[in-house]
Image (cartoon, rainbow, N blue to C red; front, side, top):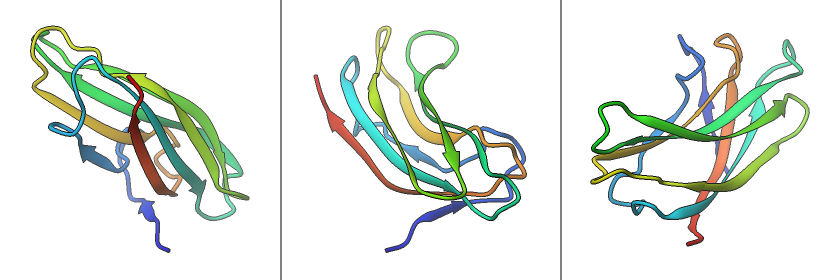
Length: 117
């Protein structure tokens, strides 16, 4: 199989991003999971985050996320439940991976989102 390589980022939040508007329901909870691994041997481990950016009737977006640590020695599963909390009408929701230092390239694979409630 193939995975997605996140590289040449200019900010820690500059990882892969997916528009989930129309796929996620407002005020629903999802079990999210993704596998990740650091590329190369220069950095043994670093922080990793799976983030939802939610826009609604509030003036600013709000964020919820799952945090973990990834390594260069093996694939790490980051998994947990997140709720798409919305005030009024949801206008956008994006999912993205972030957090390793900008000079750290990393792979992501096998993302999953399952409606829990």
